[in-house]
Amino acid sequence: MAERALEAYEIGTRCEDTGSISVEELARLEGFCADRSSMLRDWATQVVGALGRIIPAAAELLQKLAGHGRAEVGISAVGALHFSDNLELFASVVSSGLRHKSHKVRILAACKIQTFGMRNLVGQLQDAIGRETNAEARGSLESSLRLLLDGYLVKQLENGEVYVTVSVGKAFRSQLFSPEEFRQLGIEAIQESLRLGANV
Image 1 (cartoon, rainbow, N blue to C red):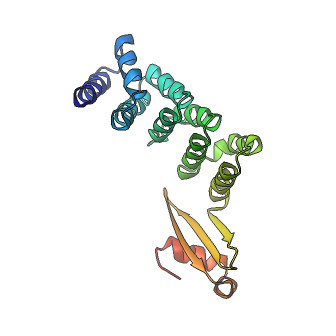
Image 2 (cartoon, helix red, strand yellow):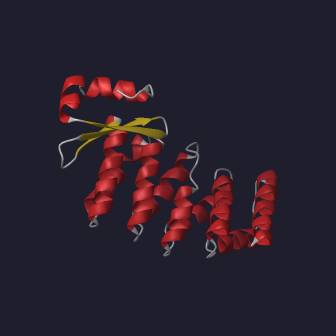
């Protein structure tokens, strides 16, 4: 595996330097990205994701991988989105992810949209929620939408306590409140405090 990981790295470095990729190099990377070894698969997919920002053929491969029949391959492809500077690439990959047969890939795609604040993809996320038949996935997609649109999420637990999650950049902060605390403080003060990193 180490030799193939090194080969993926060398392909990535060479292609980044030249700004192009050969058919053979693309095929090698695609094979690595579908490997059963999660370490090699994730590493190679990260290479493809980085190249996809500058090489159209690599961007097309990443989109293809996001729709791959195996969930773990789709997860690696959507997970390789660390940049939002190539909006077309980002949109095409998460769009494939939102339509994947695995609810785990759909959840990750929705999370990426929310994390990067991609409000231009709200329509696609809403469509995905409308299609969703898995209850767990639907709840996760709805949470991503709420965090994207509102910047916070409030969930009332069965015991009456209130769990508040606030988006802070590309991260989250959450805290549990009693019903009395929640009413007394109010959502605006709770949001501000959590964004500042303080427990209320």
